[in-house]
Amino acid sequence: MEKKQVRPPRVLPPVPSAVQDDIPLNRPKKKKSRPKNTLVSTSLDGLVQAAVIRPSEVSEPPTKDQAEHTETPAQRKNKKTRLLPELETSLSQKKASSPTLLRNENGIDVEPAEEAVIQKPRKKTKKTQPSESQYANELGVEDEDIIADEQSNLEQQTVFTAPTGISQPVGKIFVEKSRRFQAADRSELIKTTENLDVPMDLKPSWTTRDVALSVHRVFRMIGFFSHGFLAGCAVWNIVVIYVLAGDQLSNLKNLLQQYKTLAYPFQSLLYLLLALSTISAFDRIDFAKTSVAIRSFLALDPTALASFLYFTALILSLSQQMTSDRIHLYTFGNGSLWAAGIEEQILQPWIVVNLVVALLVGLAWLFLSYRPGMDLSEELMFCSDVEEYPDKDKRIKASS
Amino acid sequence: MLQTSNYSLVLSLQFLLLSYDLFVNSFSELLRMAPVIQLVLFILQDIAILFNIIIIFLMFFNTFVFQAGLVTLLVQKFKGSIILAAVYLALSISLHVWVMNLRWKDSNRFVWTNGLQTLFVFQRLAAVLYCYFYKWTAVRLGDPRFYQDSLWLRKEFLQG
Image 1 (cartoon, chains in turn blue, green):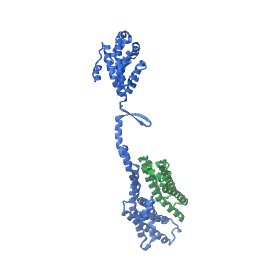
Image 2 (image 1 turned 45 degrees about the horizontal axis):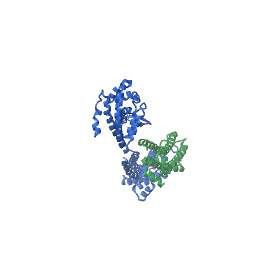
Image 3 (image 1 turned 90 degrees about the vertical axis):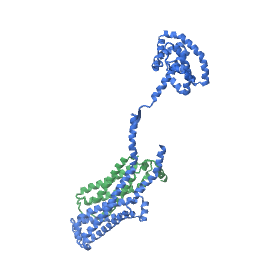
Image 4 (image 1 turned 120 degrees about the vertical axis):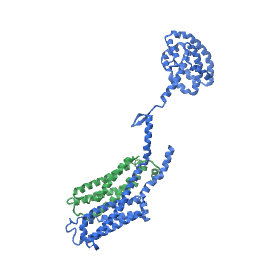
């Protein structure tokens, strides 16, 4: 409580005429404010003082101060009482020395500087430093101690503010970009991160898994189309063949003449559609996972049967490649290619195979349409990931 | 970690090459006005298959599983695709050489023999299987679990 009562004179501007009066006022102030500081942070105090008191100054005061700081409060109390008579003696000495001070060149500078202490503490310290050292040498340890303490006390305030000024958050932030730290405005950075948040939120929604899934779905759509188109084409093909061949395949020459331009293109189209349909059907039963595929075959799953039918149709269709080319080369052929009477021998199995292919693809299409939404590939390919993801989400939440 | 854009690009390239392969397999017999056309188509097809094999191997190398040294895990998982791709490439090259050898002087000549027919059937069947397995592998490699350390990988490691 006493400390607070003593404080007001410190705030008051110093009377220019009474330098000596200032000292007694400041002295108890210092004595009482010092423990305050030391109690708060002795280590910081020591550091600050070490920083404040420059090498040009006498080396004793800081050590003395540090010694004071390290002392216990009880010791400090004793010291206070001891210092009181010292203070009186030092004051008397100061009073005596003040005229000499005025006479001194440096001493003349000191007095106005001391007056300006409270107004411009920093300037003052710079100006008085050389003078002070001499002053201290002249006056001895005790007087010097008083002024140094005074200064350090005042400088403490300035120094205390100075580091906080440096360590205060600056508007700039240093971000490492391409192995270099670049200054970026804090506000801008906040803005950019805010802007980044939007794609960051969007990004997880479109991963490589989603790309794979979308590609898979696109292919399934193509497969859907090819199943129907293939079934339609095969049926159309066999109808055309039977119509052109006539009743009981009596007009095979007509068939050859009419159909030769269609035979090879249709064979090619049939292969394309059969390939697409087979791949699509395999996708549906997840043929790559053999165990799953075999299980579906054994369970007589319609999709598994459909894929089997497609594969059989593909083999049958491919086996007719030679005959198709023979039909295609009907006009180009010489006698050896289409000898008289050989047409029925060659065309009959070809027609039968085409009929079987048409039946197989038609049946496969029916089987597939029984469960059109079935897609084991998609289920098995990505369902196992889903099991793992909740754990991941939990981990992310826990870390955040 | 595999970037979505990179993966999309690689996947589209793979599908483009697969589409070309399917197209040549389907319509190369029709495009035989001149033997050179077929020759170019066949060469490009073989290069496409080779490119696809290289791409799939590059994708394997890019996985965390491979980089962690678990090559056997990848090989076990995709051995069907690797073997099929190799077999298909071999079948394709042999068929192309055979067909071109027979048709080089006259592209509209009837060249089929039982042997060629058999090879043709096997090559085309292998093409379908290769296409399916390759597509399956390419899509499967889009799984993010292949590109990061995960519980699944540790389980697989312990099992293997």
